Length: 554
Image 1 (cartoon, rainbow, N blue to C red):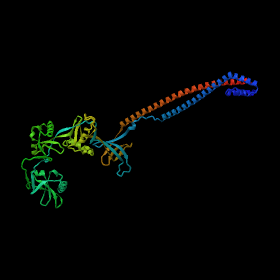
Image 2: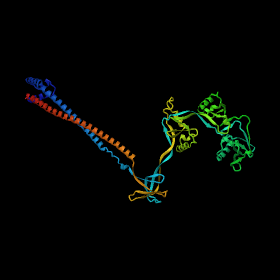
Image 3: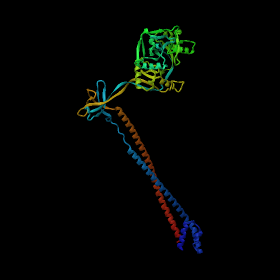
Image 4: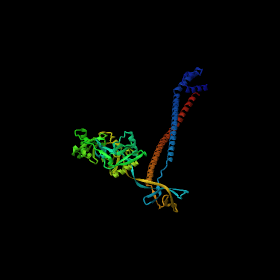
């Protein structure tokens, strides 16, 4: 019974408390009462202490497990830091320390000679093998020379100003005609003006003009002889006093032919009455001050040319194909020279910044030379396509003569975004200059080179010359290239030192984090030892309580 009683007590300690579940094991009523009394005493005294010890032991076990888990996490974090540290060290090993450049790397031997005109320098020598002409090197040599060159530039915010400009020009005598023309006969045949609309006349004129390029349409007169052959003569020559060139297609040979008509064979019939004149086909009229358009142009002109106001009655006007009103002198029209022609040129570039703009003057040899050089070097530009007599302008800036075409000047003049300030923030202006530009002149040719005992070239004679030149030998350091390399080295060193600083800073952070984790791990070890010690103590208490409980039932 004692064994059975001991088993019941153990169950009592483990299972939930219930008197009936344990007392029912015993049949004797006295034993049952004794068991109930013992159990009540045990529950009230010993069981409470034992249960508290077990709860404490469980709490310590849970705490110990947490400490072990946190320790594992700390170790994993330290492992990750170790990997980071290894990667950082690999980055450090991968860095290359920059090497400072040496002047020797930028120093070379230079060979040169003087041919009497230029100082030539040899830039490349390639040895020839078995040359049929006996030359042993292919030499590239060069010199620098000032070459007169057309240069294109862009001028930012050029501040181009345009205005209506009073202008004077000359009217060519050949462009002046009378409304009533004198009539002519040549060898008894009536002479009439050439009519380009007449296909037959046009065909003959085109064929003749290829042989006689001085023939001008507005100067040609024609007549037909007895054989039906069409002849061309010059109106200017008919007006003169000398012989007249007579041009035609010879029906016998079907080739262009030329004859001379003497003044005796020419009959001139002058018109009667007062003559009126035309300029380029535009009839001139007397200046009318009551005509507001004429008066406006006149007032603008006399500000620049006050001599126009001296004899108003002599002034004559005509309107050209562009609608511009021109002024000239009746006296000059009736004379023999070229009359002066006055007009207001509208929208003409007048200034680029503070520089006065003028039309290109081909009579100025300096301007002409510069203009022709620009055309040569820039043949496909708007500048080259512009009419040099009307659309090419020039100005001088700090002694430099600059050229621009009217189209480019106008484009800049109208490009100002604020029309109240038209000369501000204009688009770039394309302009041209002609000047001496230092240019490298380089040639490559075969040569016979004599070498000294050390293998250095001493003399040279080129394929196309019988002259032997002595070579000057000197060392040359490319200071610019060396300085560029040194600048690159300094930059690379800064990059390298910055990378070292970054790696050191990263390593320091890793070490600091590792020290923090190591300290935490030591704290966990200390806590683990303390928990283990306390658990052993609680275990002893539990064991003692169990032992004392079992002895109660012995």
